Image 1 (cartoon, rainbow, N blue to C red):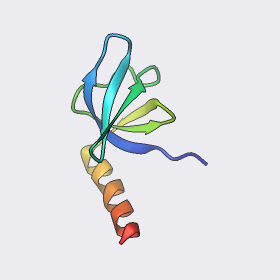
Image 2: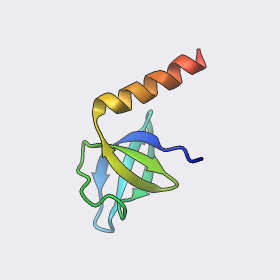
Image 3: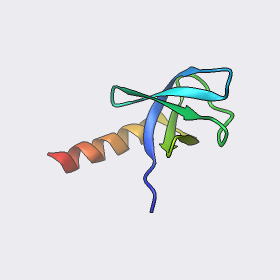
Image 4: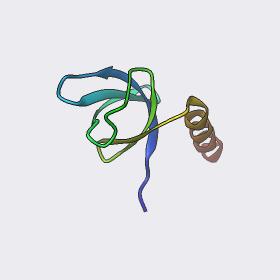
Length: 71
C-alpha cells in the first residue's frame, strides 16, 4: 500500500521539480510523472514525485479526514 499526500504547488523550477506546500511544510518534488502541473494546483505527492493533479475540494476532504482521525 502507498500513501499519497495532497499539497499545493508553490513554485516550479527549470529542472522539472516543484515546491509543494503540505500543511505549512515545503517539500521539493519531481514533476516527471505529471508535467502538466501549474503553480496553484493541488496535487498528490508520493515518494518525492507528484502523481497527479487533484481538485482543491478533494485535497481539503483528505486533510479534514486526517484532522478528524487525530481528534
